[in-house]
Each structure stands twice: as C-alpha cells, then as structure tokens.
Image 1 (cartoon, rainbow, N blue to C red):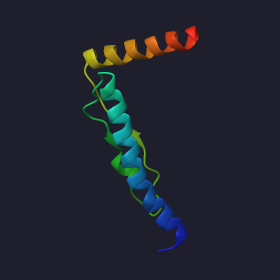
Image 2 (cartoon, helix red, strand yellow):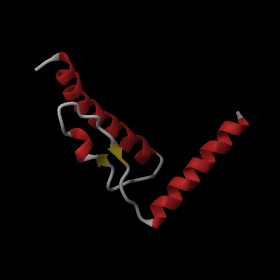
Image 3 (cartoon, rainbow, N blue to C red):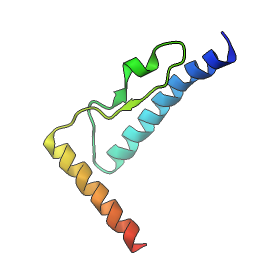
Length: 79
C-alpha cells in the first residue's frame, strides 16, 4: 500500500471522529440527528473521500436546529 492509499484509508477513522464530535456538539445543545453517519459510498474505492451524512430528521428536530442556528446568528451579531 502506497502513501496515498494509507492517507485515504486514514481519512475514514478521522471522518468517524468528526462525526462523533458533531453528534456530541449537537446533543450538547439538545439536537439529535438520528441518521447522522458516514456516507458509505464516499468511503469506498482506492481513494475514499468520506462525507458526513446529516441524514433525515423529523419536523420537531428540524425546527429545533433552525431555532438554534438563528439564536447563534443573533449572538454573533451582538458580539
């Protein structure tokens, strides 16, 4: 296995760490995305380019996430 293949393979564990960090950060503010995961097709092939799939959520979760983002935007304007 060459350097490129090792680097590409190493990106999958990194993507999983990023997914967990995002899940934890969202849950810290009360938002749970039940389908949050890695896109399986992006993790295949000789040079995988993992993508975090935010998945699907119900309307209540979408509303919570929208409200959270709007509060964050307002907080940024007040700084």
